[in-house]
Length: 81
Image (cartoon, rainbow, N blue to C red; front, side, top):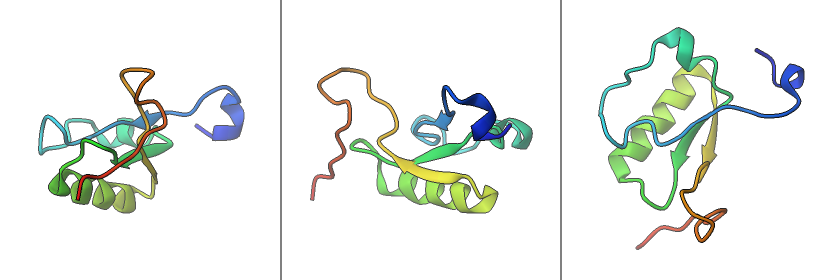
C-alpha cells in the first residue's frame, strides 16, 4: 500500500508496547502501517526503546505523539524529567 494511493489517511501504530512486551501483530499486518509511534507523554523508557527498534527493523517511519484521547492533549508531547 503506497501513501500516495490513499490520499486521505495514513496508518500509525500507536504505543505498540504499552500493554504487552511482545508484538502480537503478524509481520504482514505490521508492514501495512506507515508509521510507528516511538514516543509520547506516557511512554516508559523500555517502551520507547522497543518501539524505536521495531521501527528500524522494519523500516517503518517513527512518529511521536500519534494519538490523543482528548482534545486537551491533542498535539502535545512532553517528558517529565
